[in-house]
Amino acid sequence: GAMQISQRSTSAVNIGGGKTYSDVDRFGQWTKTAEGNFKSGQQVEDAPTDFKYSRKITSLAANTIASDSYHTIRYAVEGFDAKQLNCGFSSAKAVILSFYVKSSLTGTFGLNFTNSANNRSYPTTYTISSADTWERKTITLTLDTTGTWPTGNGVGLELNWVLAMGSNYQSSTLNQWQAGWRFPNTGANTILTTNGATLQFTGVQLEVGNVATDFEHRSF
Image (tube, rainbow, N blue to C red):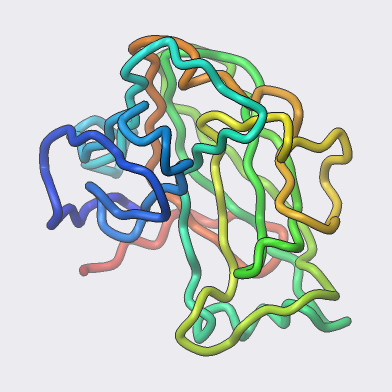
C-alpha cells in the first residue's frame, strides 16, 4: 500500500488494455482492451509525510468515454487473505479503507468493492477538496452477506478506483451491495477526459472494524 515496490518499471509507461500490471507491483488496472494507452502509470517520489513513494496515473489525452468504456486502478485481495472477512455469510465483517490521494482535479470520485465474478458490487464515492494536495480518505462499509467469494489463491475481494467509467456500468444507488459490476454515476469520467490530468495514491490500507489506524509500514 506504500507503493514502494516497482520491479516492472520505474518510469512512466503507457497502460494497455485488460487486467494488467504495468508499473507499481500488484496495484494494476482494468482497462477496456480497445482503449489501451489512454493513460500512463509510474512510481514517483512524491508522497505525504511518512511515505516516500506514490503511484501516479496521467491522462494522455482528452479522451472520449463511450457507454461501454471502463478504466480503473485495480487491487485484488487474494482469497487466503480475504477469508477472515467472511464475505458471503451473515457474519461478514465491517471494514474501513483508508488511503492518501492527490489529484490535479477536484470534486467527487468513484470506487467500488466487488467479488471475483464481478456480479456483486458496492459503489461509493470520495471527495478531493484541493488540487495538487495530499488528502487522506476513509470509507467504511459492512461486506456482502451474499454472493460467491473465493477463499483460495484466486481473487477474494477486489477494489477499483474509477479513472473513467461508461454509463453501462454506472448506478445511482450508492453505498449498498447490489447485483452487477456497478460504479457511482457521479464523478465517473473526471480524470481521463482531461488531457494531462493526474491522480496519485499511496498509504492504502484495509482493516477490520470502523476505525482507521495509522498506516502499518512493513519491510517488503
